[in-house]
Length: 102
Image (tube, rainbow, N blue to C red; front, side, top):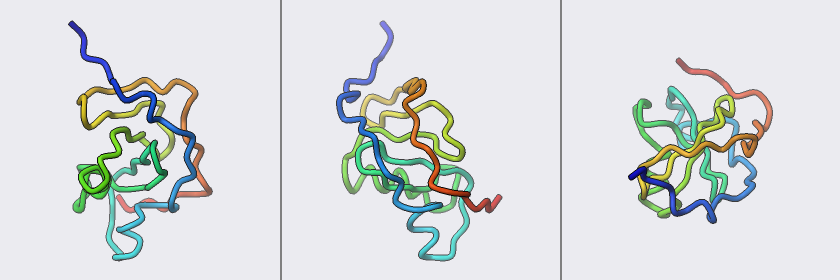
């Protein structure tokens, strides 16, 4: 049996919180890739980044779904169900150019 995301109803159209990882920008830290929370729009860095802010955001808020964001990649991840989600055309547009640090 294939696992499915049971939190699709929580995916919203969001405005990104920053043009990069919100916390890394404040700290002057670097990131590898970005993720945007599809519940509130928080932009955090991926788990390959030193600070893993997207996952920390999930643990602090329990917002279940993030989207690959730099550039929008068409996929999401549900932290609770641990499955990839095909977002199709339902991606979050970038709010201007995203600085690159890798």
